[in-house]
Image: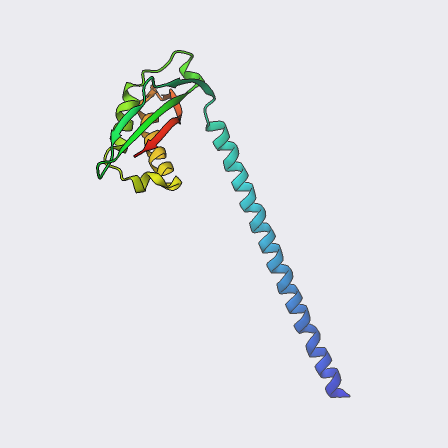
Length: 152
């Protein structure tokens, strides 16, 4: 009987330690998740406040034909999404056209045939255009809309 009591007493603390560890791990996971969610949502609010308000859209008049690699070409037409700070006056698209030609010249059809490839080049182009159309720390353009995109 003394052996049974000894074993029963020894098992009780082990269960308590296991339960305590489970509770501690659960609390740490919940606090970590809550903290992560807080910082993720906080970042979204800061980013939303940073995003400029949309203004007028300025399109280019004629489609561009750009030479790609291996005797292929790209026919592209796009519009620039201006910011509200830019006002209602259309921006001059000449610089955006030049940047577009530079960005796409020499690219392969394979690079442009996947969504990932198009988005990668488009985001690089957008960064260059936003930089080119920033005056006195005021962004005049915030986006690009492709209205025509044909490779051959």
